[in-house]
Amino acid sequence: MSKAPSMRCPHCKGKASARTSVELSLLYREVTYVCLYSLCGHVFVAGLEAIRTLSPSAMPDPEVDLPLSPHVRQHQLARQLSFALEQDSYDPA
Ligand SMILES: [Zn+2]
Image (tube, rainbow, N blue to C red; front, side, top):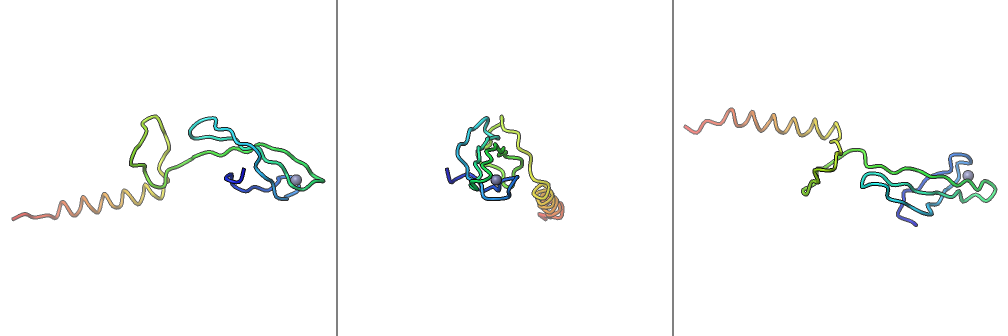
């Protein structure tokens, strides 16, 4: 399986190859890696987890609790504040 992110063996620091992947939830997957260095032979499991949102979905699932990245939240607040200030200064007369 080549879609999994590359990873190094934590013992010999050599390349490890992903062999299998199991989706345990929509936000978490476990990937089994095999060290490619034959004298090491370490086999291990790594976790792959969705941890934060960088750009909100246009089709949000209310069951998914994935917080906004702090820098995105700051950017959104700044835009909302800027928009609110523009509305306050709007004078239709
Ligand atoms: Zn190794």
